[in-house]
Image (tube, rainbow, N blue to C red; front, top):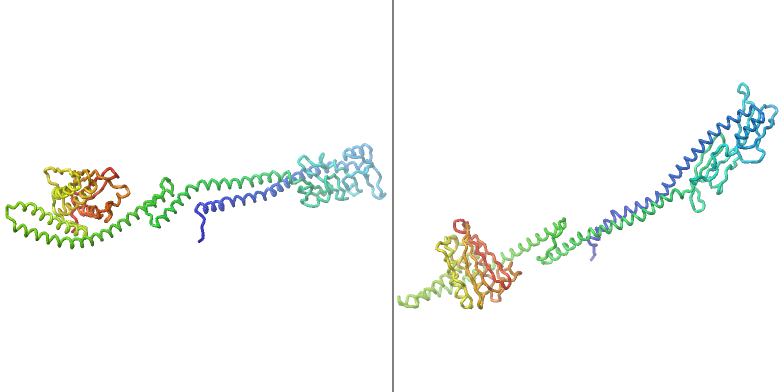
Length: 528
């Protein structure tokens, strides 16, 4: 049989799938985007640095170009000195190599120094080309101070004379690396950006290591990679704690459901929680109790049917002998003298036989139809008869049934006199069994508005709490000699009269039975 994971395990799997996995994906995305973010930032820095250098070189070139063209019109040494200062180098003047072209040429410096080769056309009168002005400008005349080395931001600028392909600034690494947009140097990646100037004909490259720019992002990504799983674990732990009570309640409910399905209708679940789970628990308990009551009622109905069948058989078996006994007693009565002392007990015996016959007939009628006669009955009569009959039983068991005292007014109810006598007698006989050997019992009547309540109390052994809700079930008895029909018939008679019966008892503290019946003025006439 396949074992499915518990509700809690499935819930935690959902949390992992819905929270932890997306957080892990976000962490990986942050790690990957860290390098791109640093590269984008460095590229922007390099572009800004190149734009500034190009702008300043352009401005300086315009000034130098103007100065050189003006100097080409004179050959005086002061002008040469001025030009040399402007060019930040030593220059000397020499005649043109071509006698056909009137021109002025600024020759190479005396010392072989790197510089930017420039050639400027010179014009005479009427804007006629008169020659060219050639010069080699040192890098410092075009670039800001320190532009040829690493800056404070770690950016390295490199300038190349495009005319000669000469490198004009020192580099801390191989020049060929600048041919790539990205290169690796000493374990670090470097980014390269380039700009080209038409005048002067130079190329400027800016390079910087990616590490200072990507490292903060990578550090943040690493922290995120640590924080995100930690947050996921915390979330998972909180989810486990928060769901522990819920899943425990659900597991308890599932266990109780299995128990009820197996027939344990007394199983209950806790109802302390005010949440939806608590509501489900309360609904489950109510449903189980309703099912238990329904099944018990069905069982009782089946028992009532059995009682009806039993009563029919009993009536047939009892009434025939009673008829014979009554006939024999009547024959004896006919032969006795009018003043014979035997006539009193004989009359009593005939009354008891008649009462038994009526009781059997009434019980049979109630068991079969659940209804009783609707005669106007003084409740004192059947109750007094029941007390008189029960008194003999109490005396036989060496117990005491206290005498019953009534008021002068009648207590009118509607019903069957024999059935009511049977109702009270059944309860009194149960009390006699409970107080056997020195106990006592008492009967009281309390007439209220619209109803009368008869209470029968005894000082007997009491009824255990786990038996109280079953004492009215047919054939259930706490005594070995009991039939389990006395209280079942008593309740059926009380119900048929539109009344009720209830019991209060505890083990060792005695029992009290309350029978409540409607008075004749407010009694509902049962349907016949």
